[in-house]
Length: 153
Image (cartoon, rainbow, N blue to C red; front, side):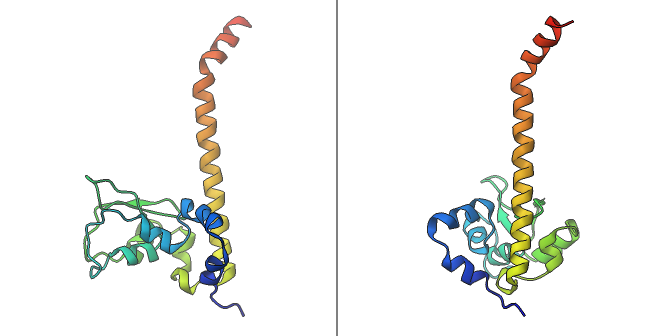
């Protein structure tokens, strides 16, 4: 039987390796650190710590400071109210999310569960990067393609 060991994994990684996780908002501590201007206090149902525990990192702005996004499924939610439960809202709006399906905080994940989530996050990140590259490549080369097609008629 596996024991919860996510904290042990994080503790064993050097700072440089941990930065990769920070960019993906993979670790709860990094999600907590992302909240710059969250409008609700630590006593609220949707406090920063509870938001991060439910998989959210802050994607707000000074104007729209109650916006958060899931690090796994990418679902962005705004319009939070202090009594909202982050886990319930996450499940309601993204029941397909692999993190929501596990329904447990990072500290309670097994190593296998953590690695499954890591795989899902990395896969989604690669897909998003490839899609952005493809769109950028197409935009940058449309004119050249039109010229090529025109010259080869």
